Each structure stands twice: as structure tokens, then as C-alpha cells.
Image 1 (tube, rainbow, N blue to C red):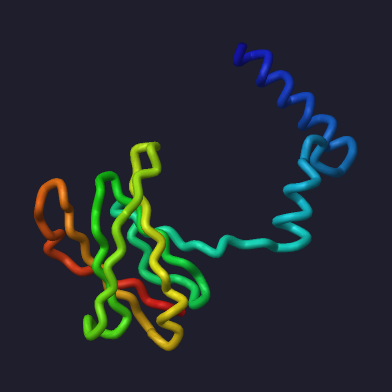
Image 2 (image 1 turned 135 degrees about the horizontal axis):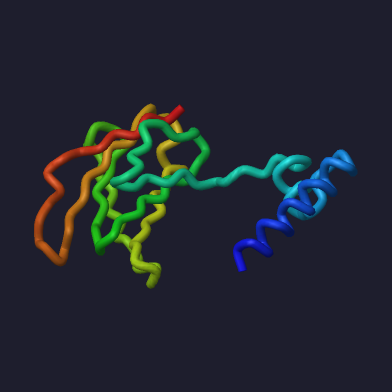
Length: 130
């Protein structure tokens, strides 16, 4: 029923214009994001969205399409952390990197080991911390 939906949207638009405010705006969403200005504590990194920077007090969530072990460092590979991904059962695997322990670092380097293929990614990725 796409035409009925489109007509309903048109009616909501007319009502919003008449009232001078969005007619069907959920008050909970307005309170959370416009009044309280809540933001996410996670920054996501994916192969198809390789972020270059992340906020200092943010948790880095790495998302992959296959099981992986993430090797990462915040001090030029002097100390290496190993974090396996977890299956979300939604076709992705995720790992949250404990970046709170690297408070003074300026960048994070990471690479991947793919256990099913028994191979390394062969490249390092860098995320600057700002």
C-alpha cells in the first residue's frame, strides 16, 4: 500500500506545517538527543568504513564479516593486545578494544589474523586518537 503510506506522510507534513512543529516526533528521542545531547561511547571501524580518527574517551568497536583476532597497539607495537571477535549471529563479528588503558596515546594501530584461513591481513591500520 505505498500510495496510502505516501498520502499519510503528506497529511502528517500538512499537520506539522500547520502546527509549526513536527507532528509525530517521539518525545523520548527529542529528550535523549536534542535536550540531553546523549552521544555514543563507541566508535565503529569496518573495512568498508575505516575511520581515521576517534574521540579520546571512546571505545573502539571493530566489526568484521568473518571471525578474526585483532592484534593492536597504542605504543608502536611495544605492547601488543590481542582481542578475538565475537559472532553477533547477524552476519558480523565484533570486538570492543579496551582503549581506556591507553589514555596518553595519540594513535592506535591494528591488524588482523583470520583463524579460518590461517593467515594475517598483511597490513596495519592506524586510527588517530583526538
